[in-house]
Image (cartoon, rainbow, N blue to C red; front, side, top):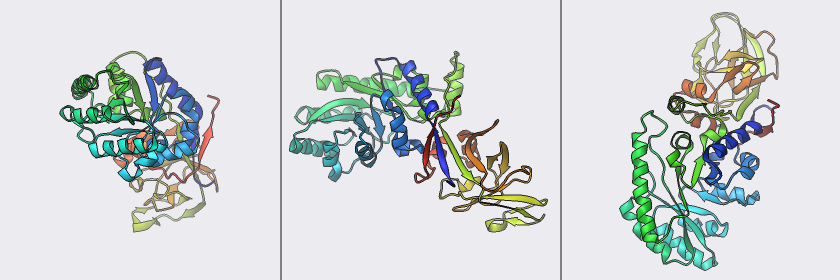
Length: 381
């Protein structure tokens, strides 16, 4: 293989068990495997973690359908919008949609009746993100229509935090918790009984605020061993106690496809953006922005070869990246190059890559091309 991703099964299950221990046995644990499991491989990750999960969370109907075709029987919550013409398929596959508009709810009711099935619906309460959801004052018609529809059952009430991981001041999140509490009280009043599953907690909320755990937590980025942000790490540290041992799950690798010596003063790559300052040994990796290696890493990134850092020279190309191995004299053709992860005593982290790119770790891992093989490994330590 020229380019591939290794998925550390031991690290993944370690991270899941950390959260299970943190939330206890009465709170459901729902891994978020949307967006190809944040780039880690949705089917691969699900196969490794479903015995430890109570439900799964995805974004789209297509993702849920792929899981069902793979034989996954766990309850699946579809958090993103599903087109009304596709709701028949959603009902047929026994999926649980998150709903925040009445036309979708009406179409679900009709389709559930046609198929003689019951759809478990999660309502989305708007509490401060203003992205999805209905405000508390607008939720009553949803509850009334569910009550009037034999094919619908109110399974859950959810929301999402706008500002819990980008700050060490969690007052906005605390205000959202209060807003959600008011929405929950109103919904349960109209419904005449408790909502079975109330859920608001993402990774950062689960780590920082126990009051967000409620009935279910949705663990995304931290499942893959990445801190939601530096601020989340700082907040956890400020609370005292031992930090959770989150272990990165992904290692991304390529190989040297060409290696050669160029003279001092030679330009490397498109645009003549880098000129050698000495006779240099340049290695070409068959991996570029098509494979997910960000073009913003041009001239600033590093890869690991034989346990040492090799700087990126010139522009990252569509399918190739050039690195300087002058100071790695034993580097040779088809040597492994680590783009993300550890090699010997060195590590290139998602945080470091995102810093070089001016983005966040979420984007770095999620944009690794899904066509690259995901290989499960089980390191001994």
